[in-house]
Image 1: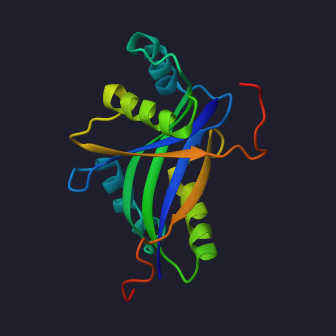
Image 2: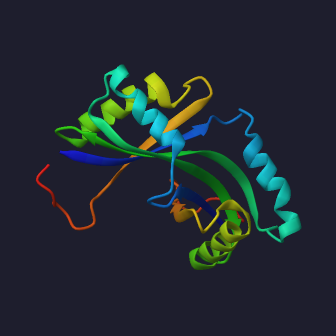
Length: 91
Length: 91
């Protein structure tokens, strides 16, 4: 069974985030004084073949350790997308 | 009132995603033949001061048009985080 996941990889609190800081520095000049606390991370969408959601989550965590994230500087959260029309394809 | 949002910026279907393609090409060598369909986008977390969630969403959409995303190549989805302990601070 296919599981569609969104993996968010973000820098841990206290680790510098230059991209977020640059966006935040530009906000007042564009009139967005009501926005702050900008942090930029990665949003990775992927599809995993697994018998259930728990197995899919474990595989994604293995993949994060192996390649997608640096656990010293980054933290990861995984959410699964429910397919809008319910069970569809045969795999 | 502060609204904490997650803004996902991803390339539209059909637009090349070299980072996702590179990850996907490396998967078999690492033993992840059960993973495919990798697309890499940005996960931007930010905080907006707005009277309600609809206003906050409109401000974020303005900010995306002004700076965060290129509407020709990218699409955006906005989700709001519920604070875990319910209403907390005074602002």
